[in-house]
Length: 218
Image (cartoon, rainbow, N blue to C red; front, side, top):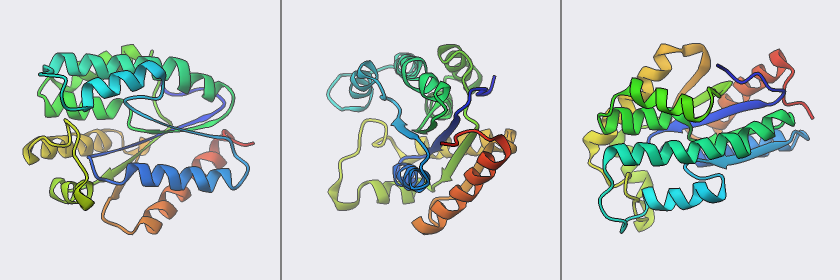
């Protein structure tokens, strides 16, 4: 089930340190400069309950969280996000940009935690009532490069970021497999490209979507 609302739904995916937040902000700025209404959000989070769940699952100090519990926390946060934030915005004709969506759970919990990608996908499709992005922008980052990026300036890693490189390698492979399975629904870009080049390529793809669908116009 894809998004059939008047708005446009775009998800940004990729490993930690890929630059998703930067590119989400760049795209939002470019679209808003044209008078378009953009909602920029993130996962886990996006709602009051989602932000509390984000702290539980990402912050250190909450004790051991087993893989199944972790997957369910992410799905619960996503259910609230889709119902309370994304769907209402799309119904109003807004362009929704989310930093992470279902693919992150499929990659992190399905592949990274070895819970099975099909099982995790099914859980999250149920949680969101089948809401899918119109486009997923995948910023492909090498796990080693990602760690260098996210620890620049002595920045602290969260609970998932601090996992070993082999965990992040499985995640990267899962993201690429997801994109390869539905290439028309993805824009895959090497995260090491200059920020301005990435932003330009993403905007070009989004412009094509807007032109062909008529959605997202102010």
